[in-house]
Image (cartoon, rainbow, N blue to C red; front, top):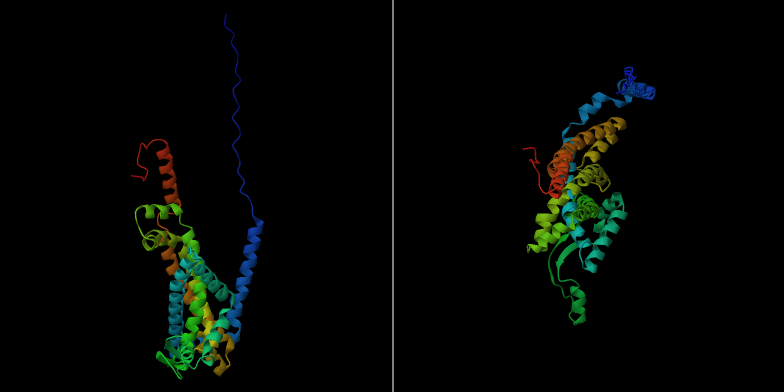
Length: 326
């Protein structure tokens, strides 16, 4: 005997009527921003204080172009000093020698504490402390007096401080030595970001500390070092304007200030300085982008996904197919 049970047919649900989420606040923000942009453009076009024709005529004259070259040269030399010395100081900070660590810490403490404008003016007046800069045996006169020899001098050669510590050199040293303190911390963070197992494996292969640092650690640390170094380079470009107070005549901001002082056109020259720094910074941003892309190869999302998949297949005892998409 069979019992038939009627199963009621399930009613089909009504189609979902999706209503897009409304964002009235966004349109209000767009309207406000549009009004502000229109007001700013109106200010640029109608305000005669900008004096656009005068600004365009002056900002490309030979003295201004020479100032641009001087700012670029100051940027390159200061960053070269900062990067090279920063790597050395970072290695000293990571050294097992407490004296080297202490000296490196004192260096970074001092140059990170003193403003760069103060350093630039200080280095520009070092000629007050030393009339001549000489090289030879230290404390030669004191050693001669100790042994009863008057006027004993063991100096090989020397230079007049006025001839050596020019405005450009003083500004370059002030910016470069200050930048080295910041680069030391950036490089130290990059080195410490590398897994210690890399160093231990290299030591097991018989590599020296210098070889490990040059071939293993620094290439991997560059991924961490490059982005903040790019930011420091852009900041250094802007800080080159500080050497106008040393003074350094072959510098962009100095030349633009000279034009404004001579013609009493302050706002047009400040706008010209803004445009020049925007152009130079844009070039540096493009270079930073390609450097970051070069040193970040294989560590993006796809690279991390492949690494994780390899680990899963290794734990499972091997993969049934190619992991790399082959």
